Image (cartoon, rainbow over all chains, first blue to last red; front, top):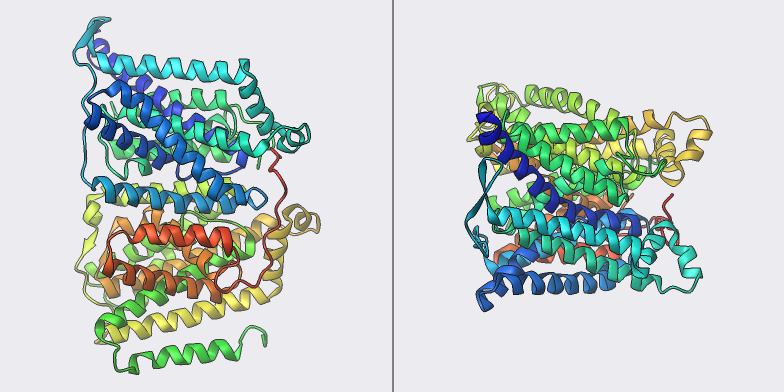
Length: 292
Length: 316
């Protein structure tokens, strides 16, 4: 019982917290994949830019809450500009060109951040400290907030996609962009706004996780691989699948660390993904026949 | 066979062989030329997959790094014959490539790219944390390999000729391959995999074969690397290095063989030139890549028609 409360429970919560944040990241990635057929290699850099933009706002205004509002907007704007200037001309081309292009974007963003903010690790203080007694243990307040905020966001995104006209348009574009175009919808604008939204979500995830992790220019490189794995596990283009897969990976990552050293955990997670890709490439919930 | 060997290629190769005779070719420039030709040859091997078969591998750094580790491990333990090193590298890279290509070629497009990427990450993580192979420091300070008897490949000049021979042989292999019936089947797979299958070709066997050849050529290139640098580190197989190989192919031009060699040379020289002025050369390289994808998708030497694309990508 002591083991459960002292070791297992906190690790379980850590996994949930990380999974929820990972879900935000993967959700944007999977929507972009559904829309443009492009696996966005720059997504990790948008996540990183979110954390840095947050640090910049916090150092100016000393308000984490304001940063939580401004950083996603700023990164969303960067995303929109990027989409219009670089991805839009590639719509008609083979998706692999888009993949290679986003790799170039990632290089520019990563090195740009290193030039502006330097290469060293940074920390950002959580907006509140302290911890709450919970189920016989104490858990940091900020992590509880992180879990709550991410869950609310995931719920809001779900409502957006099911209840609002804009959300339904995005889903329609994922289904069949050509048909939507024929119906008179400005499809390129849908693409741009969706890309901006996915960038803003990545930035939000970056900033929310920043007080828990460290901030450095390469932080996106490691995160993006996990996000790719989540998207594949969930089934490319499946939003619900991505969220579930994010929790699965988050929990797997934090629970496996109890019995293995971190590099073995990394290899175990890679192995899970390889097996899924081989046995069931459409993931948990992907549509049958997608690129198999 | 006539089409495989062109006079132009032979002349370029002969001129490259005369390059060290130029008065300004100091040791520094010779090593730079070594890097340029080595990565050019590796980009060319990747082009077999990317340009001819339409498979984008994001895991070639692992083949390169494994080759480098295979030869560094032997050199470190006193096995100095370059031939033994090469044979061992071919064995190690071959075994790994067999597994990777068997599983990866069963999938197409983005799935192929991600499978190769994740397999490479497994190798990277393994070497990064295995103390037997030096962990994150890798294997440092290995002695130079020997060609025959006591003749060591220990000067930049000897290394340069070593890589030049490798480039020539690799070009010959690739050239023979793409002008053969095998090469035409690869192009058929790129253009329309289903149709190639309906024609009775065992598509996966072809893809596996070309994947193996590309991996082995890259691995041999990797095996030559410790002779020049005296080290093998896990950073050689980071997935961003695979991305750099892809950039070289894109710069040079998909599906041209000679193009990616030019792309590799261009990449190495650009990196060297830009990084001697500013330390943000990755921005320059990223912008060059973006520019080429947007405005010159055929690359510097592209002669091939653009890959056909559909209007809006449907979910099919």
